[in-house]
Length: 324
Ligand SMILES: NC(=O)c1ccc[n+]([C@@H]2O[C@H](COP(=O)([O-])OP(=O)(O)OC[C@H]3O[C@@H](n4cnc5c(N)ncnc54)[C@H](OP(=O)(O)O)[C@@H]3O)[C@@H](O)[C@H]2O)c1
Image 1 (cartoon, helix red, strand yellow):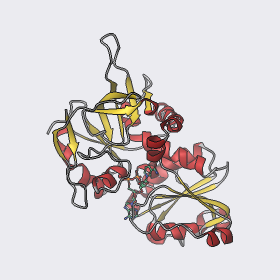
Image 2 (image 1 turned 60 degrees about the vertical axis):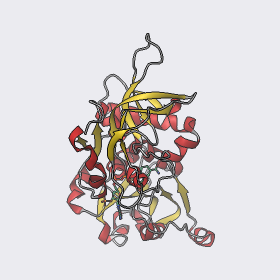
Image 3 (image 1 turned 120 degrees about the vertical axis):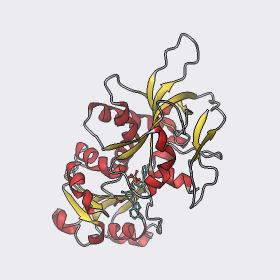
C-alpha cells in the first residue's frame, strides 16, 4: 500500500509518498481502509522524532482517521468508523486496537468527525483530570489551534463559568470568540491581562499545551485549589513542574492529560472519551473549521502545520488513496 512516510525524523523532516508493507493486525486489532486522516500537532512532533507513541520506522504519522473496517470474511459489510490510531493514519490502511474504533453515526459528517475526534476527546479528558466544576473559570492557551478551537465549546458544555483564551495571532481573535471564548488575550499581553478577565483576578483551571515560561506564569494565576492541566509543550521550552514547596505554598495542583498515552497503554480507558467526542461532533454541538488537503498537495503537510498556515484543522483527503 502507499503511505506518507517520514524516513528521517528530525528538525528537517520531510514526508514522501512511497510503498510500505500492509499493516498486519494483532489479535485485538482491526484494519481500517482510510478515507480521511486528520493532521495534529503530534504529527509534527513525531516527524521531528519526539513523539513517544509514534510507530517504529518507517514512520507514518497520523493519529486519527475516518474510514471503513476491512471485512474479515466475504459476508461482512465494511462498517464506517472513526478511530484513534495513535500513529500510521496517513496511509491507505492502518491497524488499530478494537477499543479505539467507534462506529460513525449515519448522519455524521465524516470530515467533521475526522477533524475533531482527538481534540474534543482530549479537552473532555482535561476537564475530567482537572475535576472541573460547574461555574469555574478556565484559561486555555492557543485558542486558535485544534485544541483551542473546540476547548471553549467543550468546557462550556461541561459547565465552565467562563473561558479565557490566549492567542499569538490576534487576527484570529474574532474566530476564537465565535468558538465560545468569553475573553481573548494576546499572548504578548499574557499574563498581565488575564486577571482582568476573571472574578477575583485568578483562574480555577488552566489548560496548557504551550509549556515553557507560559506554564510557570499560568501556575501563578491559579487561585487556591486551582489545577493546571499540562497537555503539551508546543513552545519546546522547559517542562519543569513546580516543586512540592511551591505547590504547598499555593495550594494548587498540576495534572497531566494525554489521549495518546491513555490509548496506547490502556485503550479500554480511552473508549468512552472517543465515543463522547463522536456524539458531540456528529450532532454538531461542537464544531471546528476544517481545511481539506487534496491528493495533489499531501506532501506539503508538514510545512503547512509548522507554519500555522491554515485557519482550520487540516484533514488529508485519502478517499482516492494516497496518490502523488
Ligand atoms: N495531551 C494530549 O492528549 C494532546 C492532544 C492534542 C494536542 N495536544 C497538545 O496541545 C497543544 C496544541 O495542540 P493543537 O492540536 O491545538 O495544535 P495545532 O492545531 O497544530 O496548533 C498549534 C498550537 O500550538 C501553539 N503554538 C505553536 N507553537 C508555539 C510556540 N512556539 N509558542 C506558543 N504557542 C505555540 C499555537 O498557538 P497560536 O494559536 O497562538 O499560533 C496553536 O494553538 C500541543 O502542545 C499538542 O501537543 C495534546
